[in-house]
Length: 612
Ligand code: AGP
Image 1 (cartoon, rainbow, N blue to C red):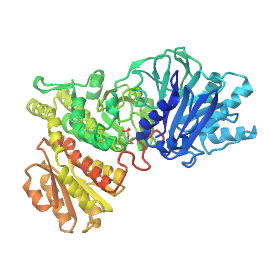
Image 2: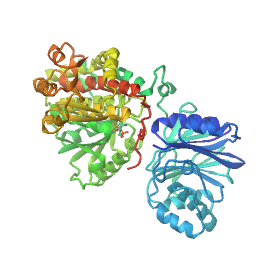
Image 3: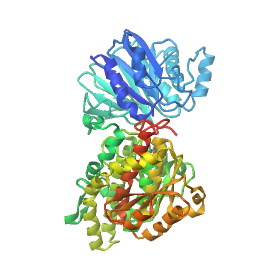
């Protein structure tokens, strides 16, 4: 969603800001803009991509050592140039960029209109900057105080950066509900909604806390306060990110790079957490909460999208191995339905970005009800990672493609480790089986490597089905969530309608859709319910459907029955989601490419959904 980048220092701000905007493109946006302070404040903005903005400013005067820049994902007002950020205040002495939503903007705007303010845009952001100007003028206070007073009047979410023509050596930033990172350089500051625009300049960062305002002044330490004017000590952390992780490194797209990174990313998710030969599996981040987990009445997993699918795999794992009752909830539903939970429940929030608004709100609700909250996040220092009582990072590294791939397999890996740990502590499976599973898990990255080795076949399948208008994905047991995830991948990046279903549910409705135009993807590795899935395949073939099946290597039975069989290495049933999801990611990728789609930034989608 919207992205913020800002700079204050001795360097030219423009190149830093424009590069930063490119780094943030992966978040999804529909317009972009920049404000530079060079004696006077200038704002440049356009609808469309950052490259359009670059064309628009070419030949213009772009001096200044302070600036703010933004990519906007429309919420209030259509995606056009006027609504793009930055926004001036009425006297054009202040400029603001803003992520989030000011919920009471309408009433604030009405009051400002009565005081003769006019508005160029339809945005809530222009209301906020005029409110700040109005407070400065009427209450005769400095900018810093005016910002604090204004933020006490607004409800909703914000991450803001403000430049002031009258205060050229100062940048004010604040956050509530939307992430904000400050990079601290040598007498210079970088600000961004995540660390990706900052990493090449400094590794010293401050992750801002809720309702904090930071005043950045050249030659001074970061001046951090709450919006209630309480002084805070900034906590400077070392950034765990490499620039190479943000480059495509020879791949055509970030999504493809991330698909191929999975043998490494899964290994990183397990690093230091498993040693099968010693019978050891542990997750350091949640050690103090193991007793709580063992005695939990139930575990409730909350998440959205792909993370929710990982949660479903987690449900199978935790119930199967550790015999703990698990419910998996969409965070967006959970937060609005007065759920029954208390201090006997453990909630696990799963999120790649750690910034998903619905998941954050669901955590807040669960906290109020007294539950223990654990997090499984990828982005270090993210809001969810900070809000939860404890948790385990997935360590997949930055995921830039909007369609989640390596984050999914990393989440499943962490949940697998958790289930194995709980099973060990509770003694719910025999030691021999536990040891066999731990050894098998250690070998999964090598098997993922093999599961990636099918380019030719997947390109042929993609060619044949690239013009299909619908796809059905079917799987059972551990691979039902994989069917959901496969369908989500395809619809996100190729815009083909796809549905995931438990294979046995097909007869209860979707079978009506099957004809010669319907490709059906079966996730059918050899497992306890293999025969049942074979029957489901026969039902589709009997109705002239086309079948693409993901099967265990050497499976000649299904191969004979289907149009295409994609093999994955043999593994224990509980690890099949880690292997079966790989060809489905590749299938979605190649179909999308053949359809000419923008796989890394699909239309209408944002990498982290920071608004409801
Ligand atoms: C995944 O491909 C999607 N882009 C989306 O469903 C995503 O998983 C969802 O928005 C949740 O995001 P999170 O993991 O960052 O919370």
